Length: 114
Image (cartoon, rainbow, N blue to C red; front, side, top):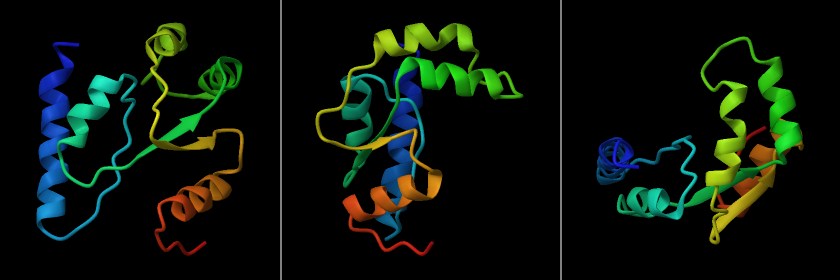
Protein backbone atom coordinates (compact mmCIF):
# COMPACT_ATOMS: atom_id res chain seq x y z
CA UNK A 1 0.00 0.00 0.00
CA UNK A 2 2.82 2.43 0.77
CA UNK A 3 3.89 2.33 -2.88
CA UNK A 4 0.38 3.30 -3.99
CA UNK A 5 -0.08 6.49 -1.95
CA UNK A 6 2.04 8.78 -4.17
CA UNK A 7 0.32 7.41 -7.28
CA UNK A 8 -3.14 7.88 -5.78
CA UNK A 9 -2.20 11.39 -4.61
CA UNK A 10 -1.04 12.22 -8.14
CA UNK A 11 -4.30 10.94 -9.61
CA UNK A 12 -6.30 12.98 -7.09
CA UNK A 13 -4.25 16.08 -7.96
CA UNK A 14 -4.96 15.57 -11.66
CA UNK A 15 -8.68 15.20 -10.93
CA UNK A 16 -8.62 18.37 -8.81
CA UNK A 17 -6.91 20.24 -11.64
CA UNK A 18 -9.55 19.16 -14.14
CA UNK A 19 -12.38 20.07 -11.78
CA UNK A 20 -10.69 23.37 -10.92
CA UNK A 21 -10.64 24.21 -14.61
CA UNK A 22 -14.37 23.56 -14.87
CA UNK A 23 -14.00 20.20 -16.56
CA UNK A 24 -14.93 16.62 -15.90
CA UNK A 25 -12.83 13.50 -16.08
CA UNK A 26 -13.19 9.75 -16.06
CA UNK A 27 -10.46 7.83 -14.30
CA UNK A 28 -10.25 4.07 -14.69
CA UNK A 29 -8.21 2.23 -12.10
CA UNK A 30 -8.50 -0.68 -9.74
CA UNK A 31 -9.06 1.17 -6.46
CA UNK A 32 -9.70 -2.13 -4.72
CA UNK A 33 -9.71 -0.84 -1.15
CA UNK A 34 -11.82 1.77 0.59
CA UNK A 35 -8.65 3.57 1.69
CA UNK A 36 -7.67 4.00 -1.98
CA UNK A 37 -11.10 5.36 -2.87
CA UNK A 38 -10.99 7.72 0.10
CA UNK A 39 -7.65 9.04 -1.10
CA UNK A 40 -9.05 9.62 -4.60
CA UNK A 41 -12.15 11.20 -3.07
CA UNK A 42 -10.06 14.09 -1.76
CA UNK A 43 -10.15 15.42 -5.33
CA UNK A 44 -13.65 16.88 -4.94
CA UNK A 45 -16.85 15.69 -6.58
CA UNK A 46 -15.72 12.11 -7.18
CA UNK A 47 -18.21 9.36 -7.87
CA UNK A 48 -17.29 5.72 -8.14
CA UNK A 49 -18.48 3.02 -10.51
CA UNK A 50 -17.83 -0.63 -9.72
CA UNK A 51 -17.77 -2.83 -12.81
CA UNK A 52 -18.61 -6.04 -10.98
CA UNK A 53 -17.94 -9.55 -12.17
CA UNK A 54 -17.28 -12.98 -10.78
CA UNK A 55 -13.81 -14.48 -10.78
CA UNK A 56 -14.58 -17.04 -13.50
CA UNK A 57 -15.83 -14.39 -15.94
CA UNK A 58 -12.83 -12.15 -15.34
CA UNK A 59 -10.42 -15.11 -15.62
CA UNK A 60 -11.92 -16.01 -18.99
CA UNK A 61 -11.47 -12.46 -20.25
CA UNK A 62 -7.89 -12.28 -19.00
CA UNK A 63 -7.10 -15.52 -20.82
CA UNK A 64 -8.31 -13.93 -24.08
CA UNK A 65 -6.11 -10.83 -23.75
CA UNK A 66 -3.08 -10.47 -25.97
CA UNK A 67 -1.03 -8.24 -23.64
CA UNK A 68 0.59 -8.82 -20.26
CA UNK A 69 -0.71 -5.76 -18.41
CA UNK A 70 -2.50 -7.79 -15.75
CA UNK A 71 -1.36 -11.42 -15.66
CA UNK A 72 -4.02 -13.96 -14.77
CA UNK A 73 -1.79 -15.13 -11.92
CA UNK A 74 -2.70 -11.95 -10.00
CA UNK A 75 -6.46 -12.40 -10.26
CA UNK A 76 -6.99 -14.36 -7.03
CA UNK A 77 -5.05 -11.77 -5.04
CA UNK A 78 -7.08 -8.97 -6.65
CA UNK A 79 -10.33 -10.60 -5.58
CA UNK A 80 -8.92 -11.25 -2.10
CA UNK A 81 -7.98 -7.56 -1.73
CA UNK A 82 -11.28 -6.22 -3.10
CA UNK A 83 -13.40 -4.30 -0.62
CA UNK A 84 -16.69 -3.87 -2.43
CA UNK A 85 -17.56 -0.18 -2.51
CA UNK A 86 -20.61 0.74 -0.46
CA UNK A 87 -21.48 3.95 -2.30
CA UNK A 88 -20.76 3.17 -5.92
CA UNK A 89 -22.81 2.65 -9.02
CA UNK A 90 -22.54 -1.07 -9.70
CA UNK A 91 -22.65 -2.41 -13.23
CA UNK A 92 -22.48 -6.05 -14.29
CA UNK A 93 -19.41 -6.71 -16.43
CA UNK A 94 -21.34 -9.38 -18.37
CA UNK A 95 -23.64 -6.76 -19.90
CA UNK A 96 -22.80 -5.50 -23.38
CA UNK A 97 -20.43 -2.53 -23.22
CA UNK A 98 -22.98 -0.07 -24.60
CA UNK A 99 -25.47 -1.14 -21.93
CA UNK A 100 -22.83 -0.66 -19.23
CA UNK A 101 -22.14 2.86 -20.48
CA UNK A 102 -25.87 3.66 -20.66
CA UNK A 103 -26.45 2.35 -17.13
CA UNK A 104 -23.54 4.35 -15.76
CA UNK A 105 -24.64 7.55 -17.50
CA UNK A 106 -28.20 7.10 -16.27
CA UNK A 107 -27.08 6.45 -12.69
CA UNK A 108 -24.78 9.49 -12.71
CA UNK A 109 -27.32 11.64 -14.56
CA UNK A 110 -24.80 12.31 -17.33
CA UNK A 111 -26.01 12.94 -20.88
CA UNK A 112 -24.92 10.18 -23.22
CA UNK A 113 -25.21 9.71 -26.94
CA UNK A 114 -25.12 6.13 -28.18
